[in-house]
Amino acid sequence: MAQEDAAKRIEEAKKLSKDQPSKAEAIYKEILSQPPGTSDKAVREFETALLGLGELYRDHKRTQDLANLIQQTREVLTTFARAKTSKLSE
Figure (cartoon, rainbow, N blue to C red):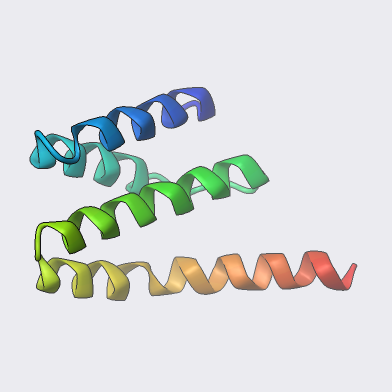
């Protein structure tokens, strides 16, 4: 998925999150199904999609889905932290 396309899809999901949460969830999951890549922009978009999906679950009181999301993305999140730490030490 191209970066510009991901940004547009995230905006679309944000708009759909209140009226059509299932469509918004599908968009976020589509974005999160692809590895974020190495560019800062791609990582930010991945993080934005992850936060958007988490907020969607929170707003619709889907606590089990939120817990599962955290468990599933824990490894990716630790990778982000390592990448950011290594940039600081350079």
